[in-house]
Amino acid sequence: MNVTVHALEMEMGRASKRAEADRPERADVEDAFRTIIRWTGDDPERDGLIETPARAARAFEEFFAGYGQDPALLLQKTFEEIEGYDEMIVLRGIRFESHCEHHLAPIIGRAWVAYVPSGRVVGISKLARVVEAYARRLQIQEKMTAQVANTINDVLKPQGVGVILRATHHCMTTRGVHKHDADLVTSRMLGCFRDNPLTRQEFLTMVD
Ligand SMILES: [Zn+2]
Image (tube, rainbow, N blue to C red; front, side, top):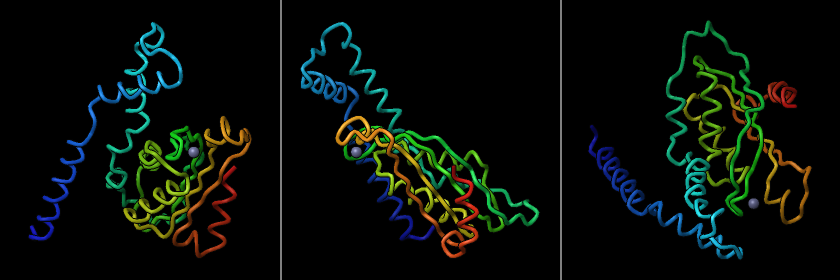
């Protein structure tokens, strides 16, 4: 192994151990939820709320499981026996649940993920797993859209990638301006999806 790479990996190993050491204990998180409940004006010791901090901590563990997943790793296994298939592959309307990093409020939406392969394809469920790995983090939709597209582009090196996300943001529908029907659409087009209007158009007609 190259010495520089080895040093880098040792440094990364130390960094992840540091992050692990800095991670609060579950008991600290439950205390934090008790504080929030008290701050709302309720009593965290009353019967109906006594188990809530523990449940909320478990729910957060699920909401933010994406930090423990490496989206690039999900795309490592590819298939090359595709008989020269070089047309668009589209996974449509992948439901996702995320949380906005500004209010910790839910972002509920769907994703359309497309690519034109260059000699190899990936199992279709893996595209959905990549969306989920990024959704289960604190997010802004624009960033998540770019992350999904960039990861597929970097790992699969296809001819192009298109990603469209359409979502409602609970920080906007249930509070603030209270616009219930508004959804946010974001897109990122790379390679032939950016350069070829016909490819882009073909993809857009599949988004409903
Ligand atoms: Zn928000």
